[in-house]
Image 1 (spheres, each protein chain N blue to C red):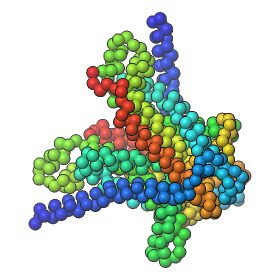
Image 2: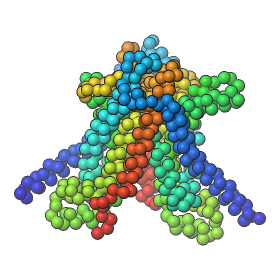
Image 3: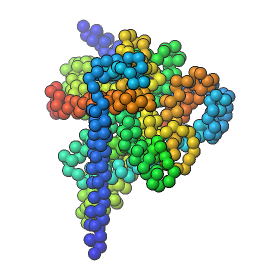
Image 4: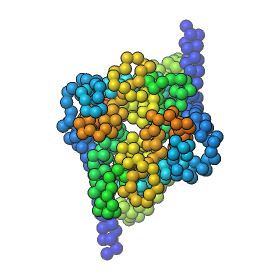
Length: 296
Length: 287
């Protein structure tokens, strides 16, 4: 009887342990898998040609990612520019000024906003943001725009990453000890001065990490961006012009992947670029966040 | 004078911050109201009980029942699989190992990173695996990829509640002569049941709403799948394809489908919150 129980325990432990180690390998396997798949393309061309050329003509074998990388970066950075100040303000208000009931209410709002699927955000963007940007475009740039543009994508994207950034910044702010604030207030600082000079300064690494996570999230967002960005690969300085992002490139062309040689490996290389950039940002942000949490 | 300036600054800043918070709530309301108003006017009952007939995407007869069922199949299967993979791992790093061991930290870290990988990358990776294994776009492949997407969500959710189980409960069980396995699977798991329900529902909601990962792997079809090897339609993709047609009638259906999806996801998310508050019958907070 006793032997059986111990035997069961040993087998169970072994199984669970191996499962745990398998998950550790998952990231590595994903990276390698995508990299091996894009070997066909990489074998034929030097990597610098691929990354710094903007001529994308799969039928003649030209694969230049520059326009797509530019589009992704532009949309992501614009989205961050809108979302970051907004979410820091919201998080500071909820953490420092709001009562507990208000804070709990807003936590539910954030969670619900985060649970809405990206297709719904895309549809909302098509219905509300695109016409709005079209109006703005005709006022500011004069030229007629369809509204499907970089700015629309950035606005929709910023709404999507808002809940993530607010959530993490709020967590960081709440982890800062009350006595720090009390000390500042006791010295005669107003609430805002205590926040500005003590709380925010202490939370700065955490806030930067939150922005990093938001950036990674925005970088890989596919459906919503694809629905409102217009999907024309070009390097343009006007936010009212359409743009094309890496995830949208992968999602839009999976159908004809095998009709053109090298096309499948080109798309997998796009996925590999995405994967590596997001991996780097995620790892840096989580290292910072873990360190911040341990120190507080 | 100097004092006035300080308080004025405080007042202005506070006003801006409050405005931001209210705007956030306003955005959520705006999104829900937009989808509801557009969707309700286009919704009719035949959309819910019929599958797509020929020429559905040209404005023909039919509904999106196949997509709703397909989404439930994929998300349901994936949530089951992800649950059976993530629970043992989380219990292992929390109960079998010492508190905050190196391995536990490492696994938590990799779940955090996996959580940040976008679903399009999971889709591309899944597609690579399918080519490697010779699988075609099918329900099975869709389930497997969504399992990968849901795994970090579930694991993080469960881990959060397991960490809150007081160490005394584990110690008490071990003192009574239970093996570590019995402690984990009969004592600790009962403590975290409501938390697990919440995590499962949240992961399920994410699985239902995900489009980018199933784009490659589950394919798309016009009927209800009969086996694991058939391609399957999903609700988010149905919305996307309907919206992509130039016909207003079909686009209206996309609005109605979006309303259904929003309703599903919101009710799942609200139920999850309900579970996390109420269902804590077996929970002991302190010994």
